[in-house]
Length: 90
Image 1 (cartoon, rainbow, N blue to C red):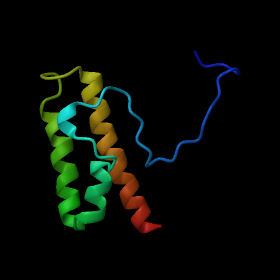
Image 2: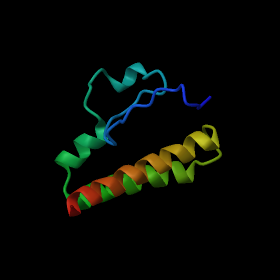
Image 3: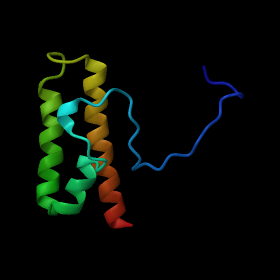
Image 4: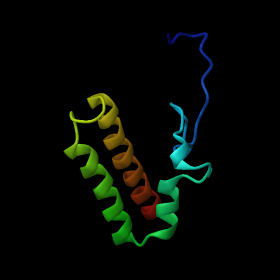
């Protein structure tokens, strides 16, 4: 419940918050994959990576995981790409 007694913290937008158990097959690196993409890929490669991930979740929407969970993944990828583009232009 949100009320005046709840303590709030400012969290940078590039901070990843664990909301579930991380599967072992992801490895134990603390490096965020999307941050890695942004550092390593050209603009065209990065756009393609984001488009690929977003279309993957759009295509399987309603077939694999809970739709809300899948929509949140789409929103996360789109938001992070948008933020990356804003950072480039600022």
